[in-house]
Length: 209
Image (cartoon, rainbow, N blue to C red):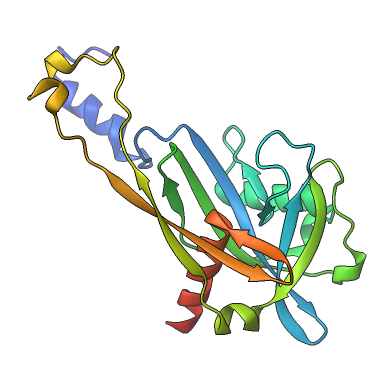
C-alpha cells in the first residue's frame, strides 16, 4: 500500500473502517458452552471430566468447548465442540445467547455461550477420546452455594536476555504485578475450579442481577 500518495489517508480509513477490534497479543482463542439440561424435573448444568489421555488438562472438569478454528466464529466453535464431545447432533443444541468472556494472563481469550442440551442425560454417550465422563449438578446448588475463593500472585520473572538498558531505571524498573482469583466448588467429590468455576459463578451472578 502506497502511503505517499495523495489519497493515503483515504486508504488508511478504508483499511480500518470495517475491521473488527481484536485483543492485542492474544495467541489462542477458545469457545465453550455452559449447557443447561433438564433432569429429574430440575434444571442442571452439565459438566465433562476430560479424558486422562489428553495432553492438556487431563482429568479436569470443564464445560464442552475448545479452540476456535480458522475463520470459524466463536458461536460456531461452541456448537461444533459441544456436538463433537457429547456426540449429539447440532439440532439438539440450542444457544440462548453469548455470555461474558475471559482474557486470561496466558495470551488466550475464552468466549462463552449459554444454551440448552435437548436430549435426555441418560442418552448422552460422549466421545471417549476427549471425555472420561459427563455429569450434572443442579442449578439450585450454584444459586445456594458460594465458591471458595483464593488468590495467587502473578509477577514478572526477570531474565538475562531482556534489554534492561533500553528502559528507564534498567534492572530496577518496577514491572506491574497482579493477582488472579481462583475459585473452587466441591460437589459429591467432584472439584470444579479455575475458569469453569469462574464462569459458573458469573452465570449465577447474571441470573441474580
